Length: 118
Image (cartoon, helix red, strand yellow):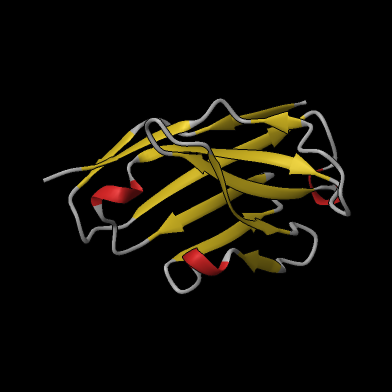
């Protein structure tokens, strides 16, 4: 099982960024993909989840309206897009798979550093 994320990004405040997470080694539609971020010196922060089987999404309230999760089943790739970036969005963004229902996030991407700076 592997989740491979896209490379580091540098954005200006107010811009958008899209991070990809390509899954392999398992049936992509059989697991949710969660997105989690970690700002410098901070703990992990759960952003939300997508069900690749039907595209259903759940967003943490903090990110609603500013984050969009998508999944392309033809390439087994999940995406997170974050808009109206601000300096506080500087963080390492991770994708992880889970069966949901209280199951652990049992496979993680390597992380993508997004830096928001003018």
